[in-house]
Length: 455
Image (cartoon, rainbow, N blue to C red):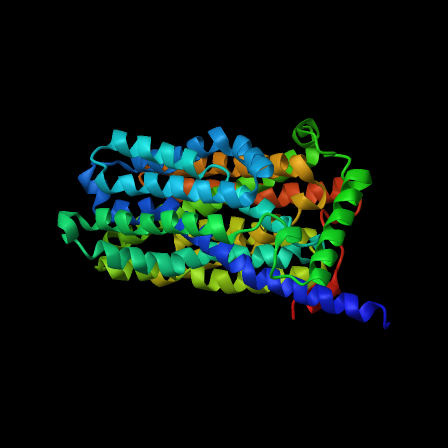
């Protein structure tokens, strides 16, 4: 008992310091990243679509081509991060995408929009999997679900705060002689450049190099992470002993990529088209919304989603990540999203969409605790990037197909049924993965001490 007490105290303080010093900053980077990525969804129904004469299919293609650019450099970018370190590489990514995002202020045709969206994807390539990899290298696996959950809070909160911010900026129509949607692009792009410069000096690549940990905390983290990596390399990590062929040849990696595809398909169908759907309420229900009204309505589903995400990841940390922590929300999301089509009022429709958003965001951070359980080193960089690449394929597919099907069918019934199908497929694949592992669980065992260490 006496010998364990100092170790538990060191673990608790070390994890708390990582939670305070690193997670909020990386989450802020993610906040700006997601806002820049989805700013086009606020611009389209508030002047950009009309000014550039965009159809739903053209807007969907412009939204989705971002992901093709991202795919081009995703795996190479994550390998570069593994080689050069997160501090340099994540800072470089942020400054580059901030510059490209700034150029949207002066876009004047659909062709220019396509080009800039593609280049934005190229510039952002590797940021998200790089951030996941970076945080995974700072805490042992038993703490990872909660750490990634805190990081992932930035994504729904981007819309909670970003939608009203975008609405307010769009309302500054005429500033510098620009249309409101151009003003929005101008001011949401600058923070990426500033944060990129700050990240160069603030981030640190590994626990052994930090000064804000005590020697005992540094030693504990370094020892724990080294032992965990050695175990993964030894037997559980037979899929990935540091060479890329193991990661790309792992059936588990490819199954997780397919699971992630379904979640991201639903995520970006909502992210890019929810503001447009809400704009359509005006004709559908014979009502009128101001720009700020539409912004606040867009934000509504994401605040409950942030709360659900927090408590869901807390439960997974306390009791161990289980198959149903991922598969359960996939089922709820897959069933709820088509139901939104049959609601008789804006309030009821947004309420059902809120359930879908809660389901998606509950599952995503828990899902991302799985790959780093059996991948390490270069294989972790490649495997996580490969899984995220599947998500980027889904981002392109959901954006373009949703717009195309809406133009073809005249409504959002068919595209949202397809969202439901892919989310239910993710649930089935997650259950299949657990069954093939022979344990009934794909990722972890309960770790109550992880919860205790974060109190």
